[in-house]
Image 1 (cartoon, rainbow, N blue to C red):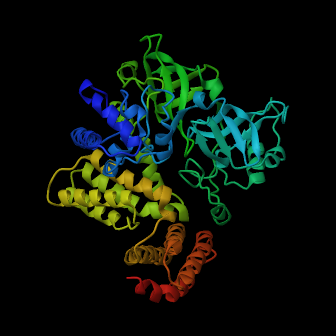
Image 2 (image 1 turned 135 degrees about the vertical axis):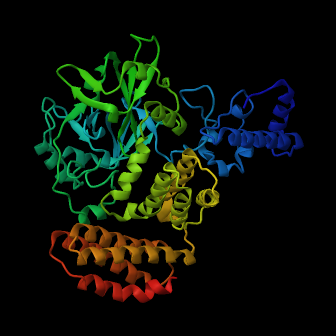
Image 3 (image 1 turned 30 degrees about the vertical axis):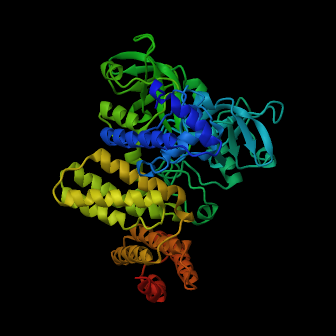
Amino acid sequence: MTKESSLEPVRTCILSINGGSSSIKFALFCYQAKKWTGALAAALGGLGTLAFAGGIGENAPAVRTRICDGLGFLGIELNEARNAKNAPNRHHDITYILKDKRSATMLIKTKTLTGYKLNCLDGEIGKVDEFYFDDKHWTIRYLVANTGNWLTGRQVLISPYALKAVDQDGQTIAVNLTKKQIEESPSLGTDKPVSRQFEMSYYGYYGWPMYWSGSYMWGNYPSILRDPEQWKITTQEKKTWDLNLRSTNEVRGYHIQATDGEIGHVEDFIIDDETWAIRYLVIDNQNWWPGKKVLAAPQWINRVSCSESKAFVNLPRKTIKRSPEYTDGALLSRDYETELHHHYKRKGYWIGESAAIAQAGPSDWSVYMEAPEYHFIRARKYLESGESSKAAAELRRGNTFLVFKTKRLSEASRKIEALSIALSTGKSGSLARLDTITLTALNVIKNKFAMLPVEIEALSVFGEAYKYHYDIAKSKLLKKEYSDASYAIWTAGSFLKLVKVSWPDTSVAELYMAGTELQELAPKVKSGAVTDTTPLDEINNKITPIVTRSK
């Protein structure tokens, strides 16, 4: 939004508004700006970022507040602190004052993080030096700290389990550890590699789940499980994979070997500060096309060779050359990522990880997301194959779980319902549209569901979900499919414990206890210690009257 000569009188009006006066011109200006924002968003099929520039909105918090008010249906949520400070984005001349549509997840370069201060619970311990990652899941496993004259002669490694938040404005990373904890942790010499023996000692010291034990990015889970209570309950899978950690400083500079020759070198890594996965490698192609940089997802890399200082990618140079250009400091919107993956004819990581969450080991923090996400993934599958009516049915099933009373979630729910109605009447649907509205809903649930109020009538959804998984558990037990039965038992227990969120009833304690009993029963079933349905039936008989009453 830029300043034009015809709008010069508005600048005077803005001053009067900031001083407490009312202004018809000011209100009209903001109304017109809001109207055109909505119109352009409709024409473009959505809004990635709203930027104010040119002197009017760029320098006037009152203007930005007035224009953004009422644009929540577009996913716009004003960051009031940054708006009040009139804080510019350090990589641009324009001002960004919207909360990130990734729901607090950032994609950020490792070079940017290098030098950030590390703030422990009791003070600063040093700065970020580099990162160690594995080349199986391409995930950051350790942050290496430069502690100056403190803890000399050893590598100070910090796992993402201890990293709370990245503050780009303050250039700091919060660490959920004390200095004493770090000082007394297992020591590794500066000239020593990170061995499996060291990691077992290190993870055992802190009590974190072992990331190398299990099929997913973080062991049994597709993302970091931060609830210590679940660490005590969850059993680690026996399946492990070989350790192969690499340094970002070492791999930075490796040549990229395409199927038909070299095509640039690794300049940097872009990571996700929520899962700490490496989402992209920044490839500098200046030797072939001066100034052009492109991105490649690590999943497209076949192998990394230390002896050759190369990363081998299963793509021809021509395809890489024609990929969407990446510029330093650019905001990586989901639209850009979608275009990038479409160019390479690959599915986005956000789709694959959604499917992984739906199949992952059970845990209370994710089980609520799994329910709607399971149906949304099925809806997408049906829509891809042209089965619109089935896609509509799955959208409606997933939508029943959006029971929390928040403005953003209610808006997402209405959009999902509208799309399901359109599909059920034979209208065509866009996969991009489905992805946008379902991911918005899931992100809200993921970040906030435990703090939100719930409609009492909607709690029947949890009872039905419990009963669904109880029936599966009993069926699997009778068929002696103990692993599947264990999963269903744990999930049924999780739905009972989720009711604890806000049900104002004394019987909620009984449901929570029953949920805990089910989760204690699950590993016994998985190990074969319990092989009949009697314990399961006894728990179910206790709570059936309560669950029935919730309908």
